[in-house]
Length: 190
Length: 194
Image (cartoon, rainbow over all chains, first blue to last red):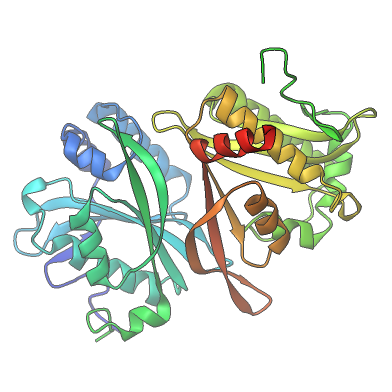
């Protein structure tokens, strides 16, 4: 057993109060680059007030459906993003994962890869899943590299799924199986 | 195709709305066939009563009305309107022009007669020539060779192979994601007309 299921080398996974989350999400939503990396649809801006009411409603509904965490740096305990296991097919042991680092000054420093490794360990050793799936846009090479480092394998590309600035872009899908994760040096339980 | 073309009528079948009176009994019977359910969905197979199906229909129509990104059709025999299946376009994402398709022919005796491929042909035309979508996706379990063949015949190509995404009867199977672009569909239609 590990004493630090929620902790990596650079970050820890935790949960903040709805008010704190809502303020951060609303602020991150003003960064169009971040939003375009996260979501393929048309983005609208929402106030912290309504985001908070959604989060509160979501918590009331069912705590066990999705596994949503926020990411804090170990160094300063600073909230920099979120990571979530969602859309879980329990009967098949498959889950989707989504990650976002809203604080853009934290990009390219290994925080995302570290958080992904922590959440994969959680998926495979706590939820006992068989595989984890993710989608990423081809215009996000930084994320693709990070997922490759965390052990994800390319499984295909959804052709021309996105239309941005008059150009069509592919969406990539990646997956990691429990066996593959165990083989990875970083993911291994200590 | 012109403005007079009947979008919802094929040679054998037609696309029609739900019949809340008659359909629940029939679809309830389909859900007692685990093979049908497993071909269709990743969810655990379970039988549903007519009352549960009725509720599901109400939810589908509510969703169609409110979200405007679901298009659900029943597949019925031409002539006597007998229900044989359903087909839907779902999760339409208008900004990029994407949609997903799902289709099922409920009774085993109704399979293999071309009802499914004809309904798919009608729905492709509806998706690309009426909704003006740019692409369609479908996800099919590896063990559903009939559906893989049917969608391949309609021009869909394999794009993603989600390895071991289904576990059934003690072994793992891949989930196969296929896609069809409007430009590919247009070439097909042109070639068929020549």
